Image (cartoon, rainbow over all chains, first blue to last red; front, side):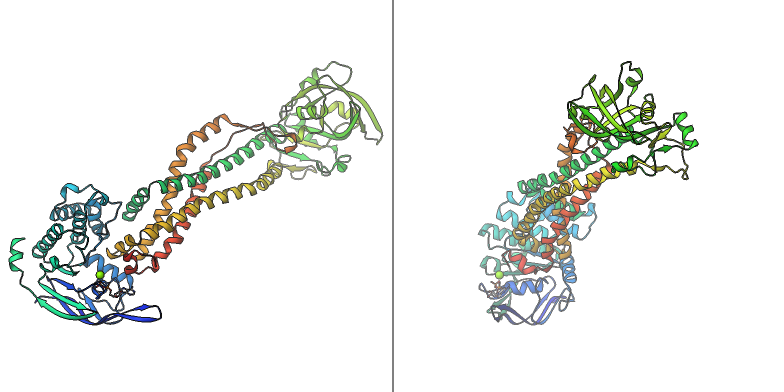
Length: 238
Length: 390
Ligand SMILES: Nc1ncnc2c1ncn2[C@@H]1O[C@H](COP(=O)(O)OP(=O)(O)O)[C@@H](O)[C@H]1O
Ligand SMILES: [Mg+2]
């Protein structure tokens, strides 16, 4: 196994509900290595999103330690966490979360603007990312003019355009049909193969699971199993 | 620069709502500018008329003279210094003699002022040449159109005037209105009859006496030691300035209301936009924007209403203001209004006024945009991403 990208140890997350605390994560320990194409699976409400949010620095743990891309997230300021996301993590959401006033091009360009990439280099990177997701003909479209599958492909281009070491994708196929789901997973697997990005999915979609080379299943905030799969045949094809 | 682009796109993307706010905000711009331009115009009009008709290069008053206290007028006259006499002889200064008098006309009497000046003077616009040319049997006077309207006296009418002369004995004589002239300055019109200085001195038995002196514009007089007291144009403008100041109280109330209206619209839009775009805010956080930067983005978005309002306001305001500033606005002043005016107002739009108003509106709009946006700083990314009401 290569370098560890995500290291979670004894992670506990409590949410205040009414006058008591609800424990959503009950001691999670995971290591994820560079280049993994893995997923957290489990039924709805099992704690997948909570775990991904904490790994992405969007939420903080109640107990335990989390370190992402070599940075311990415990006690970090909002600014430091924002910088980690800006520099190192791409997000893909279930609802695509594109900026509605921006075109496809501008949506994909946005992370590079945040990183102050100079314009020539930026344009090349944006066009390349849009090519990866096969949307070069939709460059000037607005999100409202795109189908769900196309929107999610834009979101993928946006997450990958800055070539982050880590991409986190939460239920990315939940709003898509089978055909689009497969298409998207193939794109992502191809990117994983080509540029070595580490992918962490949260899903309860069987179609997605079929692409993952490691599946950690959690139930009720606890890890139930952690299994590896050989996807070499699939990887050859993409 | 990047958040500027996003802000302007978001703002324009909001369509109708943005333009409504922009138009309302543009009213604040244009109305505030217009009102202030009117005040500027009014002040300049007054200033010009005062300089033209009354003050010229400033006045020198007999130490006892107080135009607001008729009782002092009896004693506020004397013979002027040699230096001033020389100036009068050289047409550098104009002597004026003032005396209270009672006018009897159409069976009624009223108290007013006689003012004597040299009919041929050219220091102020007070054309008494007709008096010099008069060949009738009475004492010729000139009155203003306001006085004529009020008393019913017309050109050629006769009336009796009674006064107290230097020896404190009453005397009276028959006067004739030689001319009615339009005086834009009510202070020279209301209750005043104008006659030749020499004639008046003769009637009052006050040879060489003067109540005040009007200096020629750009005069060289600089004798602080003279017993006559110097009053400059600022002194005369004080009344007008405080009248404008008083008038501006209600104008400011209107400005305040306009700004509040614009602010409410923008504030409301901001609240709505932050509420509706919570998920977008969460996304921006996930993409690595700091909350402070997102607060700035939304503040800028709101603040940009004022920039758009400036353009929209300029669009309809420029031709309108240009028209008004060249054509003027006719304002039927009542004689009672106590305003010194030609009756035609030319609003004056200075750069200071325009920039000042821009800063005011932009400042207010930015503050009301910031207030709701501030809330973003306390938003948790996960909460924002859920996009639901907190
Ligand atoms: N902010 C929150 N406040 C209270 N409870 C929460 C909050 N976020 C998640 N939960 C609870 O934690 C549990 C796990 O949620 P989540 O991580 O979203 O599950 P999953 O993504 O696997 O469906 C659920 O029971 C959910 O109701
Ligand atoms: Mg979830």
